[in-house]
Length: 256
Image (cartoon, rainbow, N blue to C red):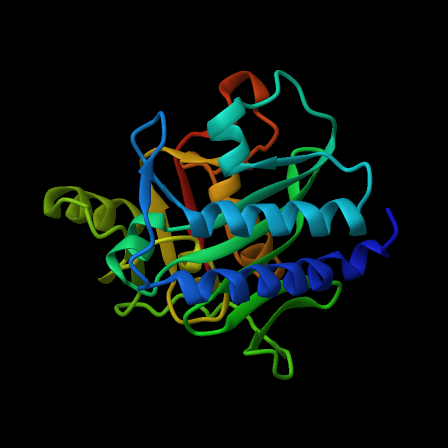
């Protein structure tokens, strides 16, 4: 590993921003949408973004394995993985991207011994980038000066949950009872973790399927900002689930 581990998040932020710059011109450009084997959409933006990220990671972190969404969709995931590897989602929120909505992100997370230890998430439309450092989570906008971000204390009576656009009303009501939030805001992609990390929301309960590359970078950022990602039973959330094809179970991401 050529970088000091404390600097990894900053390097990942630069790579995410480079991929975002490549992806952004393709947004709202009428880019062709293909369908993957699992029926989910993929575009040229996903593919070009991933290619650029893999190239940069190979140069900056030679020898560290990478599991990335589009490669996994095409060739499958490995049967086993070592204790240290990258998880890459070059375009999380492809459906939002295709609809022309701004909630999509570029994500790179570093896993060590089952935990995300560094990560970066970039939102191409707004130019926002959140990343981990030794001092905590940072955010910069359009390459400007980085500012620290922190979760906010739980605002009793005004706690905001971030939920998917497709969540049914009865499910949302049940989750509100379970997790004690008062308001909810629909939002796509891993940007939900970052909004909680910067104190703009409080909880993201996910009782549904995700893949490890969908959330690793977001979890790294949120934890660096003082938040947590746990199973609904309060257990640590594990990575490197090669036997399950890197599929996740339920989780709840929280701020303060």
